[in-house]
Length: 442
Image (cartoon, rainbow, N blue to C red; front, side, top):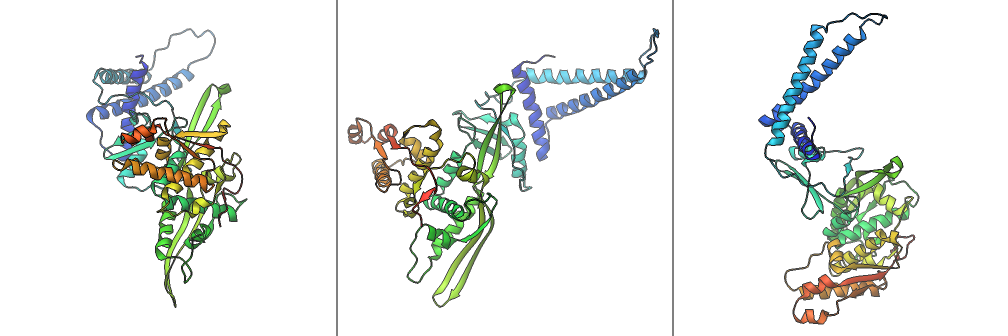
C-alpha cells in the first residue's frame, strides 16, 4: 500500500497518540487498541518469518550440481503465511483509518521544524500533569501551530503545553526577558545585580562556580541607602529573597544548529537551561539591641547560557550605565523595564552592524511586558515619554528619541492615543560594548 504525505501524517498522528497515552497510563480507545495490537502482531510476525527463513536458507546444500527441488518446510511456510496475514490485517486497519473523517483538523507544520532535546539532567515530579507533559514532548503529531504562528501547543487530558516561538529558532532568550519583565522592575534589577556581583568576584571562573552572598550584598551593590541604624529594611531583604528564588525557576531555551552534507541539511537542537542555579536559600531573623534584623543568604552560580552571553567565546553584551540599578523600582519602573529591554534589543542586533537602532514603540512595550491600558491611555503615553527622556538624559541609553507620526497632534486632539502609540518609533545610536556590563555600579 503506497501512501501520500498527508496519509503518512495521519498514520503517524495515530501512532503518536497511542505512544502518548501509553506513557501516561491513559486507556486506549477500541480503534487505538486494534491499531496497537495489529502493529505488534505485524512486527513479531515479520521478525519470526525473517529469522525462520534465514535459518532455513543458511542450511541449504551448497554442493555444485544440486538441482533437486526442495519443499519449503511447514514451520517456515506457516510463519511466512502468518506474516502475510498480519500485513493484510494491518493494511485493512490503515485503509479504514484513512477513509474515516478526521477526528481533529491536521494543521500545517510551523515554518521552523525543531528537534527538541531535554537537558542532561531533569528532575520532574511523578504527578499526572508532569507525566502528561513528558508524553506530549515526545508526541510530535500532538502539536499544532497557533493561528498567528507565534506558538505551538499540545494538550493531553487537562494538561496543556504551550511553547512561544520566534521566527529564527522557535524559542529564544527573548522569552527569558519577557519572564523577567513580567515579574517587575525590582526583579529585573535583582537579576542584573546578581550578574554584576558574580562577574566582579569570578571574572575567569567556569559557570558552575558557586558564590555565597546575602540580600544585603545585592542592595549594597545597587547603591541603596541603609537605614539610620544600619542595614536594610526587612521588607526589602525579604523581597530580594523572593526575587532570587523566582529567578532560579526561569528556564532559558537555546538552540544550536548542525549542518550536514555540504550545508544542504540543517538540524536544530533545543536545550533548556536556567538563568541561574540556586543551591541554597536561607532566611533568618536575629535579635540585638537595635531590634530584629532579617538576613537572607543564598548560594548560586550563573546559568551556562547567561555565562556564555557574557564571557563565552561568542560573548556580546552591551555596556550600560549602573544608573539603571539605582532607579526606584516603583516610582521609576518604566525607566528600568524600558532601559533593560532597549539594551537587550541593542545586543541581539549587533550582527547587523547598524549605527542606529530603530523599533516600533508597541514592540518595545511588548518586550517589556507593558500593556496599553483600556483607560487613561494619554496619561500612560505621557509616562512612557517621560521615562524615555530620563533614560536619554541620565546616559543609560544616550541619544534615545521617541519619534511621533507627523499628525500626532491631530491624533491627540481626537483622543486616538492608541493610534499614536502604534505609529511611534524608538531610535537610538548603538550602545558601547566591553566590560563591565554595568558601569558605575557600586
